[in-house]
Length: 423
Image (cartoon, rainbow, N blue to C red; front, side):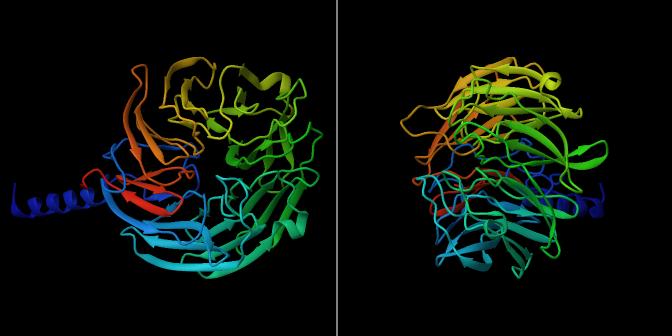
């Protein structure tokens, strides 16, 4: 091998070492990642981590917030409270703070695991879109300049949710979309990404038992016959809407046939191929719904129903072959998305504390945060086993993020970055 080729190979090796994997995209643009499934490919991620182990950097966050960080081109964006205002913070990959933009008066959370900054930001490479319990929906450019603001509550009516806002915004080619799902004034609304002007809004009000029309779930943008569509879960219905005008393509109901009270939708759903797997019934139920059809598809597109599985707060994750469900008390179960059959099961360490954060699947390794600050790492499959029980020493509610060999963990007080090579 000649000297020139040796230098090229050394250069490529250095680039790959810096990024973790040369072929992996450097984006985690929204709450559940680029595929909306809480999954990242296997890589050299740390198993054991904590305040003094495998730390690349840690940043103290001034205000309170429970949103998950998002990443675009190795820039990290986090929503939080700052000086009693709704704020967006940006950091580079080395942990250096790039900017902070405050947007107006903050409205505090009331649940012990909540905040006024629960929704995660979404970034499309040109703008960052953020949403807060105050009702504020805003867009910023990547340098932190505020471009526009709207207030969802002023436009569509006051917040009637029992607890803190949970749903995150989603983006289509033209719009940023919010699903406001509560009693009396539920609306699906789209705002022009460039100007913030209302593009369209459609009511989504249904008669349900008490609290059944409240939803904290986040929609998912999917393709329907070659066109963008928005899949929405709440008010005991899974429905698909045209991205161009919000009109309903189909709707599936039957999620509360006995009319039970307080069956609020907290966990979001996950899509695997042509199937949506929906947790409901306060963690007691799980259903598989085949995507497609027209009108009311309740009797034709429900593939299966489980009454012994489901999650109340954590949203399931999927590697495209199986759906991994972490229940509030740490029970873990993998189901086949088409049949609903159990593939394997396991148990995370039990405690009086619950698993609130949505889990992350990295290859065949599961990361699951408990509210008391314990981050569990497990090897999944029939030989399910606990690999580590890491104590972050502060409350954990946001979901972990895995990108480029680095884990980002947002705690109650800090934002952390971990790599396996650090000691």
